Length: 405
Image 1 (cartoon, rainbow, N blue to C red):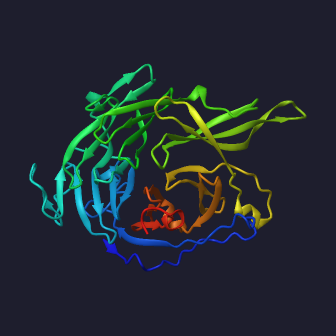
Image 2 (image 1 turned 90 degrees about the vertical axis):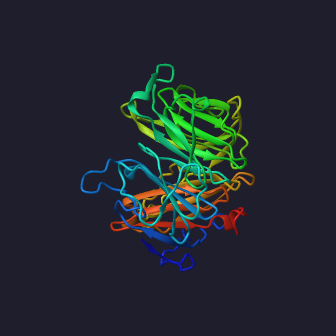
Image 3 (image 1 turned 60 degrees about the horizontal axis):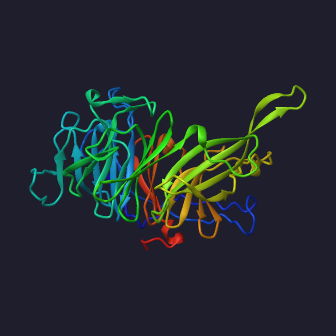
């Protein structure tokens, strides 16, 4: 593992789009920092992002950052790791059937408080989405054994996922299912989120739509609401609009849910009077009450316009941003331009205004990319290059007035 000082700026900068934006909506520069890098392999301080010798399955690798500690869930290796911002391996939970015995970390003794950096064993099947609360309790998606999976005809979904909970030093606590601790497995998990009050929202996807299971800090089910595929919210005067669900996350302050819907309209060929495709109209974010599912407020998002097209003099066709999450009073939105440049936008909910940024990500770093948004507004990422995985962050919290300074 190769570590680098977080204070050393890389030669990667945000692009100023002077010709692309108005004076009221400039694109501001913001520095990216590379904190450390991880090698590829099966050792305890390495990650398996790709198939190694054709043996590793293609499972998720996800990242969560809390208080400067980076938690990595590596599905291909059946392990969970915690690193300092300097790249020091602090803790690991691993399946001994798929990992060699640790050398750097000491084996932990069940029921005995950890002393220093430890490794614990747990029969992980397919760890995926990961989140961490203020107590550093770790929430990790995992798949149940095949014998425990079941089918729910009402949801039109296979139930085979749970959310494991581990203490800050990696000791297994319990797992969350649909009803709470020890409950029925979830349908396919689409995200795990922690609110300011340390409540946990598990977003799932089924044939019927998207469900959000909301748990208090003790693991008791508070609410369960669904956004149905056949009943997506529509704005006024919506005749002919086609609604497309993009994402749902808890609001930054933990009061309600934010649902992003993109709207399209069919294109009719005037000569043949036949359908010739669809065109983007606009995007709305709806605030939903997490208790009864009512929509109580909407925010209209400006579209993304290709800067690559503007620079080349081509026709600009507006399109939607992707929903990246919500933190520190802002919606985080992302888009990849035709030239491969990655852009992020911050939409401030209170002011209903947007600021845009260009993330400096090199072409070789796009072999594997996964982002993580911290409560204070720090955007972190694992960037998989051809020879290492780079852990980087962008300090958006310095712009949003987040908790960390």
